[in-house]
Length: 133
Image 1: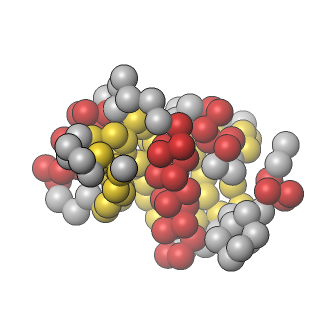
Image 2: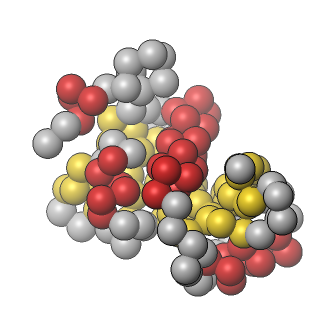
């Protein structure tokens, strides 16, 4: 079992980033995912929210820890939070995460980034028809 939580302090953010092999960047929001049985880090999502939508910089699991379903949930949880706070449009860095995972959570590649219109994703309609490729 795992839990996803907002990382509210710099020390937690830095620790999760280090465990997941990504660079900590000030000024971003962070969700951390950890194993509730032993407290070990499983993954982290580094993202930003603006008036025109969200931006996912990194969606990374801890090296050696491969739980596709858990990473899917971390990505969708982040997207849901962005949708509730801003607009239904989200972009992601081309290096944000595994391409298979990024496509599975709803992104399409557009040039040097991923994009997703989340309209309908979180109101009982996954939006799959609109975003499928």
